[in-house]
Amino acid sequence: MSGIEVSKEVVTGDTIGNFDITVNVNKFLGNSGGTNLFNATSEATDPIIIDAVKREISNMGGSRAINVKVEYEASFVDILLNYVTFYIWAPSTARVTGTIVK
Image 1 (cartoon, rainbow, N blue to C red):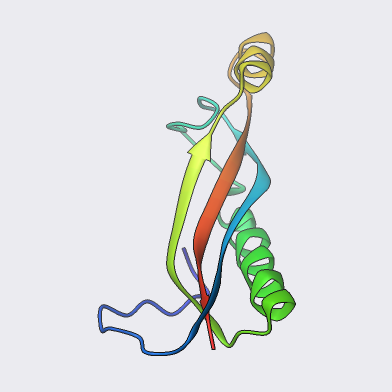
Image 2 (tube, rainbow, N blue to C red):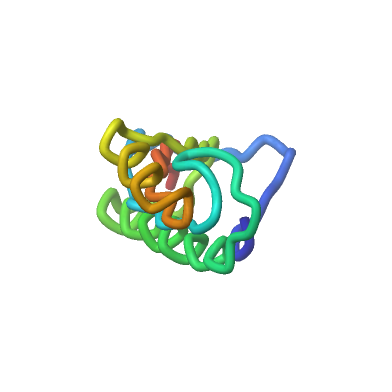
């Protein structure tokens, strides 16, 4: 994911709270929530996820997010739509979790 800082060092700060958000993701030529052969929109989802995390930081009054984890999930409807479009449209959901610190 581009546009974020990644650090292996321990980040200190007061924990404010945890967040668990979902973001709709649309990909093309592949499986919902899984592998894609070609994805012209792969980098288009990065700003959406980053903006969602930034909103959570702002809403909680924190300064940064740590231990951020992104998991892609596909519902039955997502998989059905993927099948009906002959694997052209691959809708899914990105579940983003993490901790806000001050």
